[in-house]
Amino acid sequence: MRQIPIPSDAQFAINQLQRDHGPKWKEKLLSCWARVQYPDLEPSSAEALKRLYNSHGISWLSKQR
Image (cartoon, rainbow, N blue to C red; front, side, top):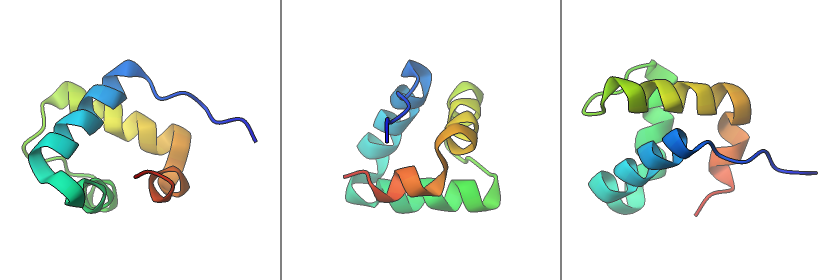
């Protein structure tokens, strides 16, 4: 199965989560997706992560390191 590339704005937001939350970044993103709330993120990053959820889903997150 071919993986859909991550848009650059979503990658930027992920990098921000990794920087701010360290190894728990995936837990933070999952929590944001579940609550549809993105505290401490710029609105553009929140929108990018919402689109990432819609395009890649939770299964993508479980495959990330």
